Length: 224
Image 1 (cartoon, one colour):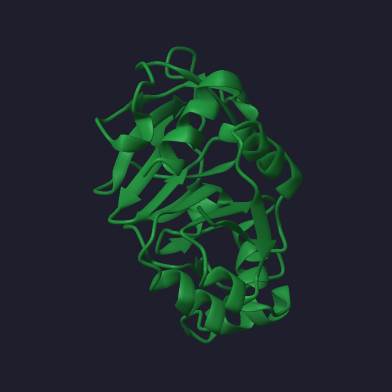
Image 2 (cartoon, one colour):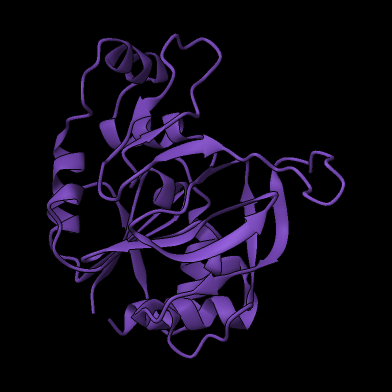
């Protein structure tokens, strides 16, 4: 099996590479289409911000990403076109999941647009978490960082994973529960912990940092 990690220029690739190595799989990190086209599966990680990931996918500056959105232009580029038309299993992790949505409200302070267009592979817009404790009314700290439980649907990605399993999260923005949601988590509000549409899948948490249960999810992905 040929597995590639999409180089979004915005991720901690080593932790994903090491997690896969523990499962006996060697992954190639690349943004080279000639390499990615040979892959049987793709993993797309991302950390930082949605703008940073889109900047990496578009191979442009943050200013150009913001300008395109202020002009109402959809993100276009060879790497983005390849990803959107990819027909083998693809797993997005954290921001790699969020950019699969239609848009994100995670816009830099210098941006004048209310949101940035993302890949549009799954339905919905990514919003800042409304992290309010429903029992006390107090706001919970952001980012949502640490271990939390998820509730999942019967999807192959969660084969053998019990309900209410703990995964590791680090994020301040999230995708609301929607048509493509296959797992949910609660931190002040319910949000999508995992999404799927056809061959595209994404998880908000970090399976590579989630111990044995995270390794099980990665193994499930490898076996698709």
